[in-house]
Image 1 (cartoon, rainbow, N blue to C red):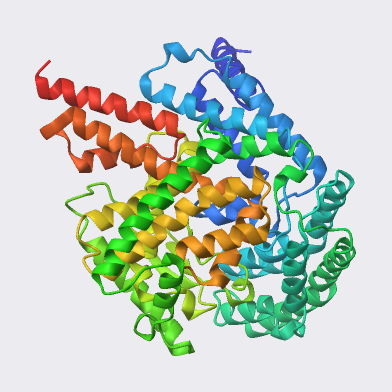
Image 2: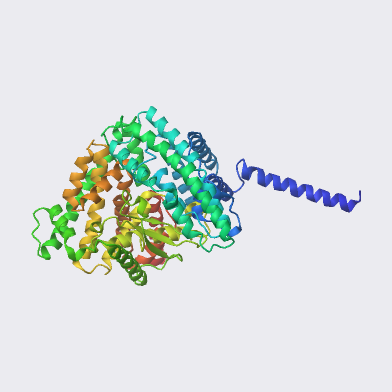
Length: 609
């Protein structure tokens, strides 16, 4: 062998060894660089969650679509694997020297450490939830995913849709396995949950397969589809009908049969205090959602204080408009019934609600320049909650844009009852769910650059919901709610969140009944009873989450006021919003550190030091 060939082989061997030295720890051990560790954590997690990948549409622009024919693994075995895996990632993270990192890397480290430590604590209660409930779960979430998230842009996407339908049975059986395990542990949802989901599931399977929403959506979406012939479409429609009849409906039948039996052993105890270690579990849910160490008792007292304060403002407006306010709840109930504030109870009336919501969003989007110079590139549109799940869905919610730009942010409005949508409350709800609320916060996070990818998607309830509630306040403070009734709508939303602090802690710590909580919310908000019942039932199946909204808002407001006092004329509201929004979702304690650092930097620059 010539010297030249030996040299080339030696160089190739060195390259292979160097690659191995880099690749092996990156994939299986401790990566040399923490950024590679961050990438590995997110990448490995995402690859195990094909539905999340389909929702985000990160891989499709690269021509990768292997995940779009699969559903998530919802087995107990997978849940246990994922818990152990997350614990291992926390251990590896802590082997890196945080103190030697530059500030941006420390922030990423701190955010991920908080998240993983919180998950580790929560994994002590792996079965302390109700995975099938009136708000969500496989019975409503999977069909909704298929018709709102699974993208059908060509023939392959259409075939993947059919493949996913064929896997409904497997996923439903995995969920059933978890439900039976919970039953063994004495973790059974309250009877009202069972009645709701039974009604929902029975209605879902009541139509012939060709009239079922999964079929009608597929039929509509595949008309004139790229790369799909008429005969090919007919074949796929036949397969969809067959999957609904032979896989989807039998899966629902098994779940219905289980819940019919479960109804006989369920009770009307509603709070998680009834579960094994229920008080400790509730303490964790509060810490998880609020990202604080506030106790249930402190949150309850805060709620009572805020209810009294906000009611005082509401009374002032009502009395100024000529109302005699002896009972605030009764007065607001009567106001909600006034014809001038309601849309016609017709399909045309409901469509007008969507049009008017979009107009509200477009108006504020055009007028925010004095308050925001950081704006998302993604747009946002308004759609109605899918009718098959509107009966038990929240009044509104937001869905984030796809990363590839194929889907904008969506503000979903629940149109089940026009009486739940008085005109004077629409502005505040649009500001919360869309602009400058959830859409600004979530879309901007997705568009961040020069940060580990997990920072663009990681969730913290108190931050995201606190921002959305704070966004309502920004609009109210800056001329977007000049009409006194719009202002009343803003205060109605505020007291709604304050009451949540009282009823959530009341149910889960103080053993309030569902009826006690409903009565309290009715008396103190004046919301329609149907809305109140849906909300209270939401807090029962999702403990602690509702407390995050006002806790988060009050923290952002406190940080803003503190910065304003310390900086005086040097305070700039747009820069403050950049600090809060420009780092993605973070726990409230870390947000405070970010604001404190910004105040220190601005103060030093203003003083010339």
